[in-house]
Length: 150
Image (cartoon, rainbow, N blue to C red; front, side, top):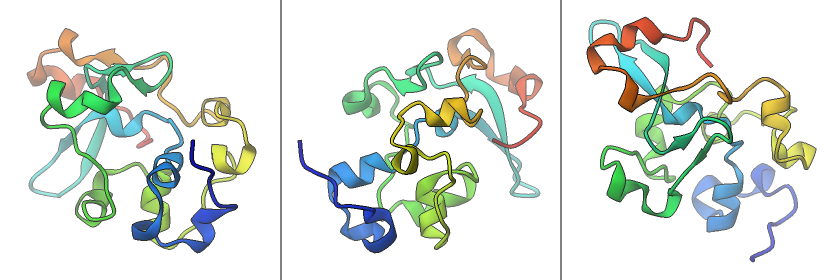
């Protein structure tokens, strides 16, 4: 496995990161894998507790990350090129979004704590609160909104 450069997120531009560095930015919160409602009239994005069919709600990990686009064609593959177009609907605590906005990582981020479970311990993940999308009709998603945007 390729070694990550020390504190690379502070010195390396997003588009110059290695693949392992890019992937290490993910804090494992699972918020990006929640289904969202976007209101056309206001542009507001509301998060639901309804998770993508590939999200494991206990680990907040994709159950088939390498092949996710094959199973979920609408899954957004985040890259430095796609980030500017989709940052608006990403969670406010997302490392990709924060670095794109020239802001710092939150103190609980696993890159800072060294603990891969620090996101969940800080209460910043969706662990244990999701409902599989296969169990809720899309017309009923508004009944599952998360009050505080994660």
